[in-house]
Length: 94
Image 1 (cartoon, helix red, strand yellow):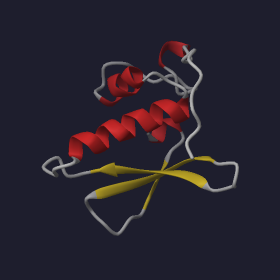
Image 2: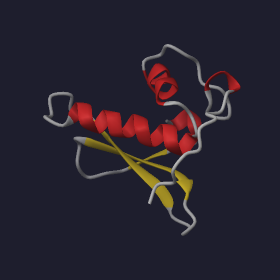
Image 3: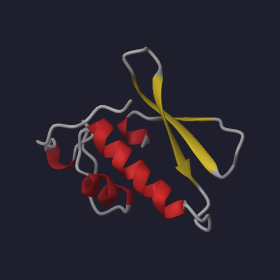
Image 4: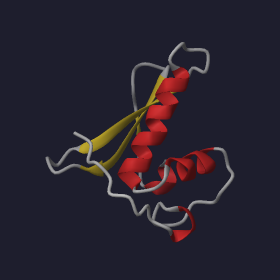
């Protein structure tokens, strides 16, 4: 995430890692909480949420985000894999 401009922030709960990303229209950074405990009951759902959110925010396909997380593909400078931007219209986060 840090390679795409997200900044790691201190967070008091060790089971979560906080990242701040692009600035919203309100002037506040988008916050993404990333689970750190694989054994947690909701770990898989939370990781899927992280992948989906990053794909939407960075205008990439979810599989590109996942591939990068798994080390399958190298990131490009603009946050898209191989310089391709998702063509599908993306729904803004509320």
